[in-house]
Amino acid sequence: VMEKTRLYVFRNLESEEPVLSSGYLSKHADLQIKAAMLDEILAQPINPTPDMVVDFPTKSLRDVREMLHTVGVDDAYEYIEAHPHPRLW
Image (cartoon, rainbow, N blue to C red; front, side, top):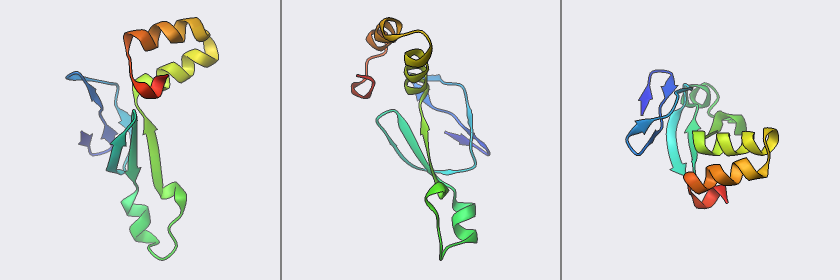
């Protein structure tokens, strides 16, 4: 769900914390959302750059990545067991 400049992701009818974005949603798969920055693309339609398409990881993916860097594999494993998804493994 987009609200002007905020991206809300829902998991089991509960919203995650909003992410600031002015992109237009183009794809949602494997705990990642792809957004196109149409304002920038339309400003330079002849020479678009790869940074005009942005990937936003969902909270689950962000949390597991952070856990692996800060608290270790054991806590990340427990989190993945509680929030299972093939991408997290």
